Length: 108
Image 1 (cartoon, rainbow, N blue to C red):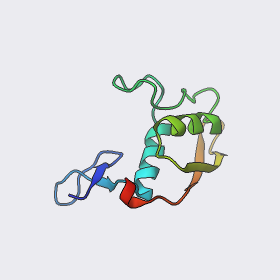
Image 2 (image 1 turned 90 degrees about the vertical axis):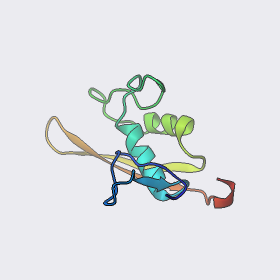
Image 3 (image 1 turned 120 degrees about the vertical axis):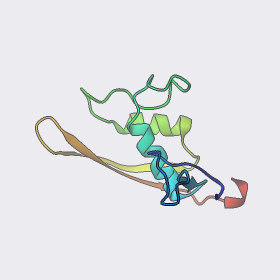
């Protein structure tokens, strides 16, 4: 198994191993952002500050994602775009685009 972190969402490889994302990879950042926006603050007993406020009434805000990323994300990642795309009167989808400063893989 490569030096990695457990993938989100948790899954198994076709060989039956726990899937991982290489530490420092784009996949790791994307999975971390997905976990961050899909978790409400207080939902994880061992890390109660992880996540964003419940978006039921106000949606997902750029400030909420940036705050969570600053505390729990890898350094150098910037949210470039967070766009809401209404699906129905009661449902929305979000498009999140990010970038990062170059990372020295040997320092990870």
